[in-house]
Image (tube, rainbow over all chains, first blue to last red; front, side, top):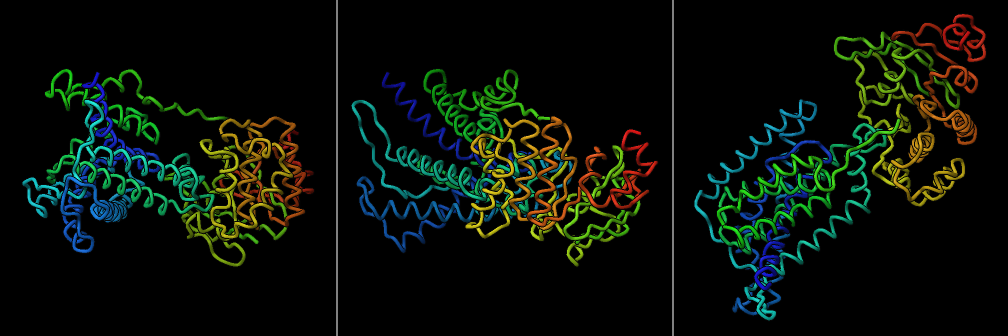
Length: 309
Length: 235
């Protein structure tokens, strides 16, 4: 039982990362109807931005000396690092859309899809050129301690992952459901032509969507680096693909679906690692993809749209 | 208020409009009638900017708008209610209406405008929290018109508002179009297959046939025209 609970907590922490990345896939799919395969690499850039800005942030906000004790300064510094990384990646996402995807807006979707793979390969290789190909160790931007509840041990980092994810999800939900921009996003994802007839500037909304998705991926990159502090320019490939699977699992284009899909995949993966064999860690995601495409191609929450005449 | 001059539109190799001229005077209701595929919807799409014109000029309120992006044209006060209504089925009725007001900054005035729309279409008020996809065809048309009114247009272009709607509701919707024209002073360019109804409420009419205007006159005269009678009014 304890082992199960422990794996569940680990799985939910991993799943939170997938969920944050999957949201970006699903939001961009919602407005542009294509899969931005470069999205996983934004997650990688997010982690690297964190790595490089941490010394600067620490100059302004010196972290606590004892890493095993909770310290407000360390926490505040960690938050600032994450925010900077989110902003940088949002700008990067908007830039990629502006420079690469927008000129291809009215081309066949396959063209854009292949271009996205190109952007992904570019980011990975440019990352190797810029950051070096060897793994770098991510600084301890958060106090490192475990909390024991009976036999169960929860890492402080995991709690940070949960809390941050929940805060981001609540904020995202507010933006999408309550703000004018968010409503325009939903309108645009339903009918582009009608949206422009309402006076919505589709370019602005699409750029906003890329920014939002990329910021979430950056947050995921930082959160993951806190837990697994070894980062390299190719680290975005597998989580990127797995988050894509999570988005499909939940029904592509569906925001709550992406979150559920991410958490489900994270739990599934840790359970397989814990109870079957760590060898199948990556296989399970793809098995899930094949399964869902065979039996429920619209995903768990996807609907088949019906039109009224 | 709206002058269309020598408007040409091609879809690839197919020419949809061969240079048409239309005048919509301020405060009037002008109708564009014609068979399926004559180019009526294309005309409206070109005016609102969602289809690009190859040649010609569209002057709205004294200014050339033929090169403008659709969202900018809406900002000028020219709103297009497209064929098939195109409401946002995934949004609530209220959210749809607010999307109509997307470009407006005078949020304080929204309440009064919503009241007016709910007053002419009480059904929308009953259903304002409902998802727009659950509305009937007629209600969706009301919503599409209401949504367009929320943009505070000076000119409204309606594409086939009677399409696929119960006859009783068609009557209501046409009454409301006249009311909006009279009470709010909104100029209307109406595209309709139901020529009888369209010529009844309009002051001036154009007959479009395979991309050319073949006839234009006061609506009352068009109704008496033998050719129009035979082809569009059912003999």
